[in-house]
Length: 251
Image (cartoon, rainbow, N blue to C red; front, top):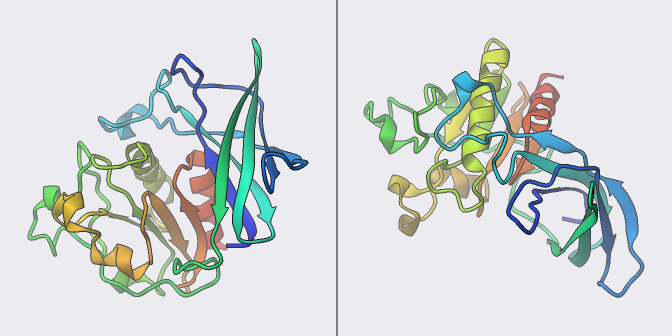
């Protein structure tokens, strides 16, 4: 939507290796127009400590070991031309792309009430963890139902499907959630919600995603103790962004 938007992305070089360097974003209405920028986009690590790494974990030599992101004001709906520019030892490398800003979205925004929807739990799945978690090994964020805790305590609700993710970052962000749960365990309720019915993309999205108006993955919502969205992150995000979202729910 028009307003301040988070732009997040990963960068790899022509050989398929992760690009690590000072990075900024430039934006223009079209590729021919004068660009605004630079908007600094610092890297945010996807790497977690070994005890929290799954089989889909980000590693130091992975294609995407960190996520670059920045906050930019986009005043109107429509398309924007974007250039991501990284300084490397061999010189500057640029990656052009397009960004589309929708006029409106059904996804609850910061400050709006979070939908009071039931999320899958180990109990609702009859004890079958594989029915509600594609991570290998499964995480331990399936004990609480959002409907039972929203409005009573801060919540971190992660929509992610580690084994079926189109963006390849569901595994790493779920690992991040697992690690941060250990740090915030007494202050925030952590919930991991799988994306597809019966873990089959052909069967469509699970009801909680429909309730939140989601059509992609992963998504993170942190919800304050009053039941309002404190922060939301779409797509790729690292440890720093996740931690800031948690802290927003605790204010």
